[in-house]
Image (cartoon, rainbow, N blue to C red):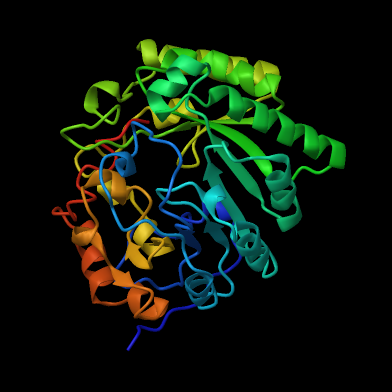
Length: 354
């Protein structure tokens, strides 16, 4: 039988983890505030920072409409839904329908895209759907570095698509979805931060984010220790970030880091002895793959090979409430609160940059 839990109260959907106190138990007292739904595990790029490029995590699939509604209907008051995982959401034919289904119940909806499929028709569909945020993972300020990171020569197409989408928004006098550009923090591209911010201004994108790089200990592609950024603010990396922050402020561009913080702060590690202890994800969100597998968070696929060691349930066979406070979730939370965290969490905050 599921443990009794309360429904979530209204919260800032981008600060969904703030309500969880430092003192936590193995039982989540509230329903999850956020769902990550991997609408597809298929992709049209071969990013050198993504585990999907190097191994088949699950058979290729899009999340079916039946599975999508089965999941979201169990938490009808969910505050925030993220419609991405290890694939490209804009490859999913039902994407706009999924967004509308969520917006009809007042949910805040967003996803990351590589921007390759952001055609005028699909852009109009996203506007009409009520999408709140569209995050474009560009990862470079020029074509050569883009191909090095993203695996294909599509920089010019993506910039053209985003520019046209922002022009469409201006023509329609709409601000939703909020559009942002994302750049993964890499040694290979950190020197392009200023140019990245200038590019954002050129194509009328008001927000820029510095995205964490998560990597395996042995490395693969550019997801490797030598490409990671770790800085205290006074070294070259910190100087480049501070310069970019100053430029963004001068140009009126919002410059942030993943994890709801600002870039300079994100360069400083916290609690190096037990970095996993800061995590609130198993008390605030649920992540489901395209085939319904429940895993702890969006970072887990980047931390260990395969899903078996951190699978917490199956939405095709169990109710979400049975999963949420079931034995596997409770065991996972118990380990996360200890000095012997789950292997997928042991280096969280250490084996990533920013």
